[in-house]
Length: 214
Image (tube, rainbow, N blue to C red; front, side, top):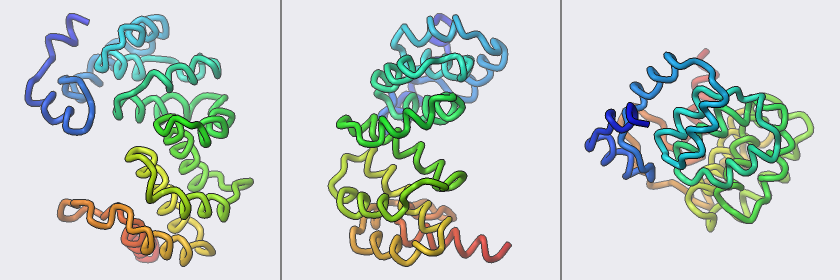
């Protein structure tokens, strides 16, 4: 904790706070510490228990993802309120855990929109890599009905899922683009030069174009 405190950078904190993250540690330096520590499940648990965002990010880098049971991951998700901790927990831990599909189903319809966004994030993974058994038409129904009025983090995840369906599944592409055009979610999102807009119709068309070029 003292080492993390010594890495506090006011400029990094200012940038992170704009994204909703309350820490001032450069993530490259944080990864360097994790590389030195290697996997330490017990230390990971102690760092997580501090509640400190930088410590929790480090905890997620040095944990053993398969060591957590379902209830532990559920409790961690409900306690992970900053975007970066939430994102790393889903991508670095839950996706590698044997309970990931069970949690995806449980979280998907959770009344807490932050928890629900994790369920959608796991669904995006399945849309792209293992769509067998998913009701893609049903997902589009939910997105069409709920995305426009969803809270920010949940809306972002739904929009990503919409784009992923349109990119990966040609049979649903026209409908996905139509939903995006009618709902106009993230249509005016400020996008840096040479980056693809998160507006679903633009995103879908650009990624399909790249696939065709290959």
